[in-house]
Image (cartoon, rainbow over all chains, first blue to last red; front, side):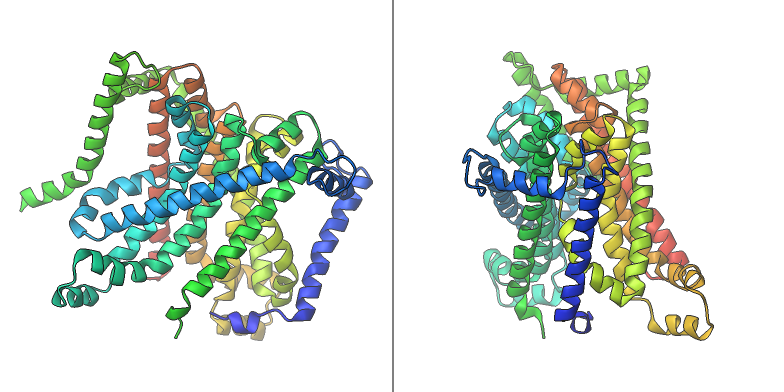
Length: 263
Length: 256
């Protein structure tokens, strides 16, 4: 759209950062002056100290666990997301490529779409028990829907003339999927995968909280129960960072992969 | 002719009926082998009727829907207000951009422990998290809606010498109404998902907790009944919002 005239110059970045710094300063004042009880709002320096200690960056102790927790959560999120993307695209292509199958199955998919992914946790617990595989299953299942529905939609929206061309060329179904369907559905699929990544992080955290699998979700829940507010905030900061970095990486990849679409 | 219509009306139900049938068969076989982790859908339907008759169904559903609606109201009002400001003033948008990009990706569920600490269990913690989760999508969508307003409308408001308040209520808000309802539709979906998630993870109230407690007390029939009911409620609420959004768009003269 109008991305050109909105590209921020150096000065704008500086001003924008100044606003962020002002917000942190406000946090500092609010917690240090005791406007908000420190039981739930630790000071920024305490949060930072917890972060350093947890990540073993402060030098002295060396038994911080935040790094391992972060790895566990990121691993769960990425594994679940990759599984979700794979199954979402494969199933979506299988359903989307045939109008007949679409007519039979799509209403069911639309019905399941608004179901919260976390609502499957109790069912998964009673089927699989409390273990890492169960959480991974729910992460993958919950994150699969946006990809699946986006793929179906992308296949359904293929220009009819392209489908006619494929018929004239007597392309096999596999060739049609590979050469026309998938490239056509690519923008939809990537948008779905981006949504899926957000869902994967959320479900991974909820799964860790409920099934007490080690990870950031469990870490922040335990920190809150023990009234260790600075550890809680350190965990929230890390989760925000995970969300930020993964989103930025995917936005970058999306721009690269869809470059051929731009005129 | 009528046969074709009947066929088209029946077609969406075939696949779910097959799924439910397969699940019924599988669960009955598992139960015969001595597993109590699953229940056949027929037992779930019986449990559902029981919950509907003793009132627990309506009470929990009311709690979840009410909290989600109130949280959405808070989050949407704040999001729309800030979105209007950021959409109208390019400088404000530039100044706020880094803060928003840093705060927005924080997953809403990460705030569950914090809200627990600050508010304890109950309505307020769930409200806070739903409001946080719905605030960001509304902010972003309203901001982009305002930025896409026909520039001439804003010029007219300047020529007429409208105050900022009048400009917001007489020009900007009516101009973004169709897009606002698209944003609200998304907000409703987010609010419902987040409310159920908070109840499953922590808050001992509402539909999510009812399902969790059914699982923990080894009542798979009731758990499945809740799962199905949550699905039905989510579908109905979303379908209602789509209908509302289309009606508003048509009334405002936008082709759907």
